[in-house]
Amino acid sequence: MKNNNPTVLIILSFLIGLITNVHAQVSPLMRLEEVGGQQKVFRSLTKILEESVGSDIRVFPSDNQQSEESISLNPINPVNLLIGANTKIGTDFRQGYYYSSNNGFSWTGGDNLPDINFNASDPALAFDNNGNAYFNFIERECDDCSYVLKVKKSTNGGMNWQPAVEIPNVGNPDKNHLAIDLSNGVYSNYIYVAYTNFTGSSLGNIQYSRSTNGGTTFSGPMNISGNGAANGQFSQGVNLTVGLNGEIYASWAIQDEWPPTSELCNPVAEWGSDAIGFTKSTNAGINWQIPQLGYMKLKEAGIGGVIKIQTGKFHLYV
Picture: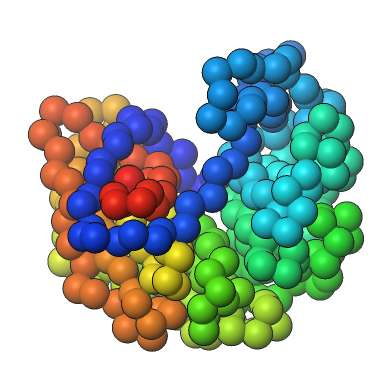
């Protein structure tokens, strides 16, 4: 939310070898619609893998703006869905949380996630194998405060939320994402969070932290994208997914001419991402492969925003 750039969606298939058992989650479809000049969140009641589409349902009718939604499905109770969204209540930026216990036919929740103190953005949601829900977001606690990265946990499908846990030493985070290992392996229920750092010597790096104890604590940051702005590259919009064997995949957009040659507010500035970065870990994020450039664009066009990554049976889709 802190840096909204035009987005061109690009689908890229990486052949990753003979992976015969890769986990993929299928989420119900979401869309945004302008209502009274503001963006509102809708869910399209689509039968997955069928062609018939039901009528739209307003998830949480409200006069407040709702945007940048994230949705997750409870793996042990598939009728339980959870949505998080940026919300704007007056002049304050908050986090909306909306949960359903009947396949999305009706929703409960609110436009203000409990215990948001001042200004929050960028929701990222996921369930673990025990049906616990996790809500990752960025928060600024006062006018003079820096941004922090937090995770809240719900043990009842999104109805109630425990106090937030702060991820340590994140610098100035943006464009965060969260994924959980839903395999039955040794890393089951490990929680992974990645984001871009916007400050200091780590400017433009994708950083990663994890929790091995159900979100009680998180590790300090690890750089998984390289030296970022120090090498003239700015990485942003990371997306994580976890395979059936517990391997973690990360992909992100790269602005490879950093800093831009003119002001960001100037419409003729050379602004926009030029490549897609990719890496993976096979040991729960202790070590990561050397980052690769999976795609390079022609200079006449750019990509930006959040890069989506999803596993398939034999391919990885970005």
